Amino acid sequence: MVMNFQRTAREPRTPFNLKIDDAPVSSFDDMSVLIALKTLLPQEVARVTRKFYVARFGNISFPGDVFSYLDPVHTPQDLLNLNKVKAIAQSEEFKVAFNNEHTNLVNNHCAFGLPWIIVQKPGEEHLECFWGSELSSIVHWLGPGYEHS
Image (cartoon, rainbow, N blue to C red; front, side, top):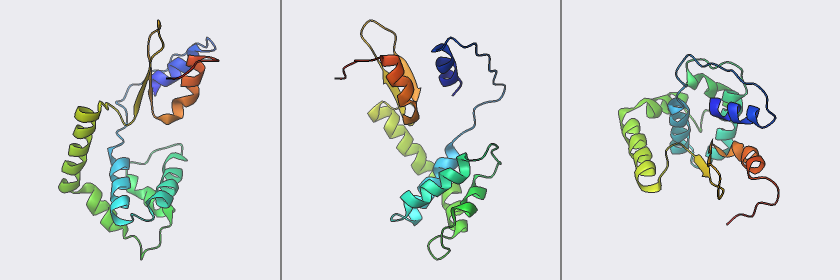
């Protein structure tokens, strides 16, 4: 994220001096909740995921317990038992399955972030972006009239 801020600040030549003292926050708990929701609610996972993300990332602060964000999701209790989500997401079986899936993505599909986008232009350095929300930065970097292949 700091890299994205630095790149965005360079475009209008704005000074940027953000200092990060702590290690980046891991998204493992967020992903574990989403996979647990997918396991319990395969038909409802898109709707519940949207509500989860609004509750989780619509806040300025990040409480330590990611599961606290499940309450605002307002999923009917007959569809979802929050204790089951916690149990699945925190189980050793889940952690092994998650690690295996991540290893497969890295080793067999060249992923080194989920998702990590690398854009190259002939004769210039490449641009690296994390996540699809960086499409506006990619478009700006490519410039007008750039044809894709």
